Image 1 (cartoon, helix red, strand yellow):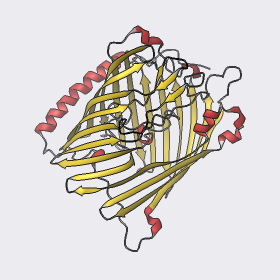
Image 2 (cartoon, helix red, strand yellow):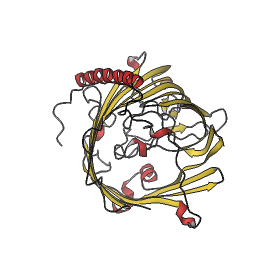
Image 3 (tube, one colour):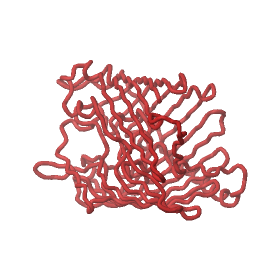
Image 4 (tube, one colour):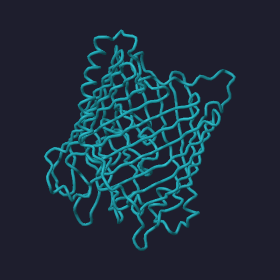
Length: 461
């Protein structure tokens, strides 16, 4: 198998990008503040704060009009990866043939809205390939699943106070490629890079109180359910660990272990600003020495802010978060980390959008003893992502390219995804693409370069 002979050099590119975005960003901020009434400024562009419009049904609508959802068939084929060691599973060929569906119900009771969604899948590839070749953890995570997704009640208590209770997703931050301030919902990481972050968030049970005053709104959040990232188990080629994981201790669902979040958001003419605070359990478990070895989730605190500014065809974003309480197996000391993201999006081309995000994460007071810690911490972790989207034929056909490099020179891995999506009708679409991984010195280095082809047929109803 052939690998890239030379790593991509990102150090100078990232430095130039950071300086250029910073200058443009603060310039645009000043222009937005002094030219709030200009016609080229976008207003109310932030989707996250737009109240969801309830589905309207006529008096003669049937009961079934309140239901919607989708069904899709996804096929994934692995064309390249390192051959396994003796006795290991060879993951070449058919990797997934998944039939997946989700049904959603939307009801209104007086001033309150009730929403429930149920999602499940069954993957036929494991039966086709002989189930006996897979470990039990792999079959448990990948062969079938059925669970409730979002399920909540939402309504207005007064003209200025809204309440939302139940399983839900709360999105913090502005980036579509990286998470900095977005810490409340875990992610489904079992199929890395196949879909975007917006489709990976897992809902959790929480109570959310929204208070509106002028251009500002304050969100008070209490998280009652503890869910963590869904990662590939041992035995899967996406798992960096050769053996089975130790026992994982999870905090109980008690009042004492309730997680809390706070967001203060202001939306203005052409720009918005948010402040965040959270007390939560780390989605990534850490190893704890002992006999036997175990996994645990530490409580962390986060303070952060995000800002976005629209100027003509340009959108500038920035996020900053400071986390406290990170711990690793090789050192019991609590560490702090600062994450910073800058991004720019340009939509001035005809039917084309180009975005570029750069993120850096700095672990304070780093010690060399952490180099061998199984959580794989690093002193400074940089990444850059470029996304290009082009639509054709009145948005019937969409082509997208996503390129992501981790590390100053891409030494911690790279990923490229190229996708074509075509709307057959208003309800049917097909999607096809290729997904390329180069783990290099990253956590998945043992798997080698991985190339995957995917095809999807989807029906929305």
